Amino acid sequence: MCLLAAAHVFVFSAAAPFFSNVDEQIHLDLAVKYSQGHIPRSLEPVSTEVVPYATLYGSPEYVGIPANYPGGQFPPPPWTQPLEKVRPALVAKTAVWRAVTNYEAAQPPLYYTLAALWWRLGKGCGFHDGPLLYWLRFLNLLIVAILVWMGFAAARLVFPGHRFLRLGVPALLAFIPQSAFYSIQNDVLSPLAFGAAFILLVRLLRAEIPGVRLGTLTGLALAATFLTKISNLPLLAVSGLVVLFKIGCLARSGKLRAAGPSLAALALCAGLPMIAWLAWCKHTFGDFTGTAAKIQFLNWTPKPFSEWWHHPIFTPHGLWTFVSGLMATFWQGEFLWHRQPLASPVVDTIYAISSVGFVGVAVIALLFRSTDAIASQRQALWFGFWSFIAAVAFLGFLSILYDFRDCFYPSGAHPYFTSGRLMLGALIPFSLLYLYGLDRALRRVKNNWIRPLVLIGMILFMLISEILIDWRLFPNAYNWFHM
Image (cartoon, rainbow, N blue to C red; front, side, top):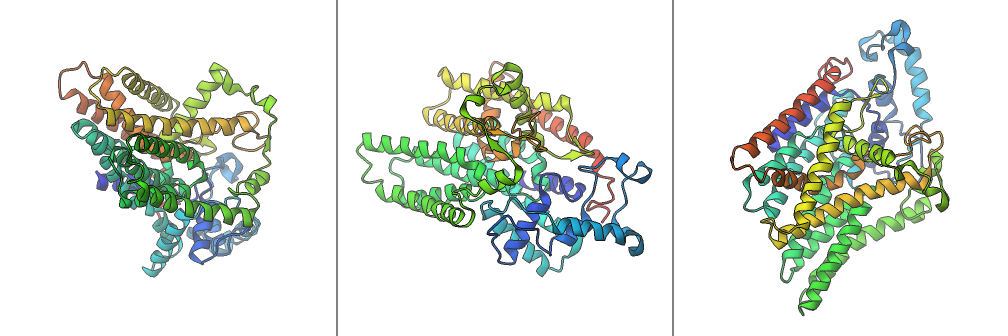
């Protein structure tokens, strides 16, 4: 399954030309700056090393439309044209890119450090120009392969006696059509970092007296989650509550003193890296998260508390708009093509309804303890549920908090944070809940073949619908297959 996941990501990331509309040039710029040993200290311009890549290899089809080009057709790649013909356009694009500001400069450093090492390794292997760009994007093959293995480890831990769920979770992760895995961006590391934290915290909950090694690894995983993406903060908040719950249990059983070294190791390994980065952001960008400068750059303004309640999310239609849009991008991503979502409304609706439905079935099964789930299993699933809900609630809160004015996304006309990639950290807990809900929905079916057949049908649906939706990418002259 790990190899199938890597092959799946390779095919679609190779088919997608550069640069995706999800700030791919900006994330490339940060990776390149880190490879040069430069950590940005302000919202500075794009580096001179990145400008030629952005100028030469960017396909206009993500945010452009054919009507804006001569003859109603997009121009062919510059490297296939005589230099004299394309020189004026390249000079103009170069000037534009030299003036672009990287407004993601305060993003946490973990992904960019790994990407920088991978970039330098690619250069050492002799890659350059377009193939070097794809080399950096293909780092996601390794990430998704590890993610699938980690999904299996989580399912085996939570469902040790249930083969369908143990194999279903990694299968779901291997074929999820999330376009974030086909792009250069730090979101791809979140499910790996929090997936590790989730597994270790479940082990911590189950340990009679946790050891120092478990405390150390758990703290490092939580620190990695924080140092990957600021949007992982709600996952860390739920994790903190889990740790406090465990401390309470240890105190009631009189074992808190014995577990002291483990808890101290957890606090130090999680807290010190977090405090160090918060201090860096405060010193460098003026606030503890480094987001104030980005918010100011995007011209978002905080709304007065009294205006929060006028947001359409507090209406049934607005709430469904938020939830369905968020679930659609959580499954399929946010790629645009000719300024339109690279998605299908029908497929989006299926993903949204099945997500709400199966997670709802899982919650009902957990509330009515008539299921065969043991206490430790229910505990892990509740942890996963609240992690997922916290991520959703956080994006809902951000939707309410700001006036987005004339920003492209979110906007004053559509004031919803429906970026599913921002909650990818909850991908493994969600997969556990989703398939547990499916299993409970089929509990009255006695035929043992029904569940695997339903799962195979789901995977075929995911793969076939993704091929049909993304097929227009494969003939694109800018992609890896034509480069």
